[in-house]
Length: 315
Image 1 (spheres, rainbow, N blue to C red):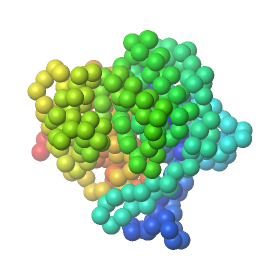
Image 2: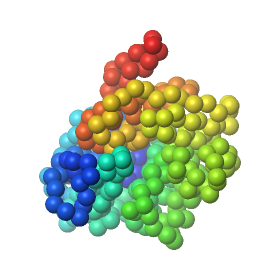
Image 3: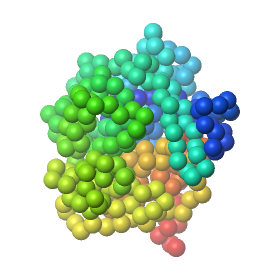
Image 4: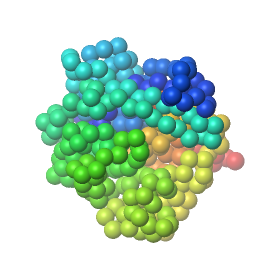
């Protein structure tokens, strides 16, 4: 049985070919690429040799087949992925502006993943598991998907699994009410919060990253503040704050880098690495992820990750 689990969406992604290409006029889009933040996370962890399972839904269509084939090939356990006979696999479209920003357009609230139920998140799937990872974009998609993720968090708490959470706030998906309440419950259950600086300030209402991390450490063991090409900051109960320098990388496509960071970090912690070592693994995975076009295409193998870590140690 998988020792690492994730509940959430499997999508395909269509990517604008040119920077500055808006959704409001015709243009070329590349794809479909296997995607979905939880799927990217699971794929990265599995590529590093951790047994990882995904609880999700796809449609019985070529997009679903494409994603499941890729995940299986990379070692992800998809036995808990339901195939919907009536709804299509979810789709995400992304455009890039000239300043490096991205805009997403999603179709998954009414796609196959949107029909997932809490009953599909069965306790038997958690047998032998040690870690559950959840993502904010999953919770923000719809209350029904959020309830399924919450069911996973409740089972994880009952069985004593470690929970990590990436808030992964998407303005395009934000919802109020029940979803916000579930978001808060999972955030404060998480042992490890893997966030961005802007997200951290938004979540806590604090004026500084340091104060925001201090607030979350009332319940979390560690808060990791991912900063892309800048230093990653780490705050924990067990040691003084520290920073992890970025690895040199030529960016082709940033989509999926944060998810690969999360997957490598969880893999490192499950393999007994220290917090500092696991964060460095995450930083290295993120640096490798941006070198290829496509959200899952840059997920690193163990050999690639070790090569980058080794080269950095020698320099």
